[in-house]
Image 1 (cartoon, rainbow, N blue to C red):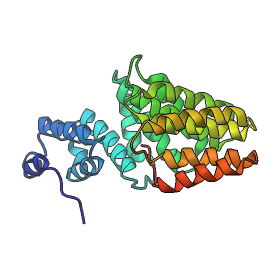
Image 2 (image 1 turned 180 degrees about the vertical axis):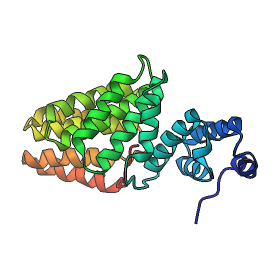
Image 3 (image 1 turned 90 degrees about the horizontal axis):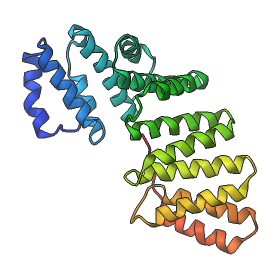
Length: 258
């Protein structure tokens, strides 16, 4: 069953049908979907899917619609079977001056290719996204791109490059995005561990622990404690390992970053 939209969206849905050929109204729908993307991506997706004839939109609105719909589907874990939708946005924004939307189009095109296990193309698109975003652009978005790039490098066993990418992601997180910062610290530690540098891994896991302990709750706290426990176990310090793994189980949840 579909989740109910917020009240103000329910009030505009009838207008969506009566005014669907009105370019000004179409733009207002896209603005509403964009404003909901971070806090209510499910509502954003439902609103976008109610647009009956996106092919009748003006070229700018249609390109933005393609970007937003890809973004909403990705945030709602809807499978992205091919890149034909996001390519509409890429093709359009490559030809005009809206570099921020082009950067986001490259990023979500990269996400489609990553989902299809085309990691090398995803890496290239993430790099294009970083190069395209205007100076002083959205730091939260840039942090996300660096994080995804780091994950791709890690999957390719390019661990030094992965560490650099996740360090950039961490530097951009700021105190307002602690879960993303925790994820970056964990991934830095993980990649050092793969490089057989357990001392550096331990340093970053401990930084993650200090950050996690400053919160009342965090979905990443059990992962922090589990990784520290694994290092203690590897060192033969079993009492410390058991202590950390016990804390890990008490906070066990499933974290997500998107």
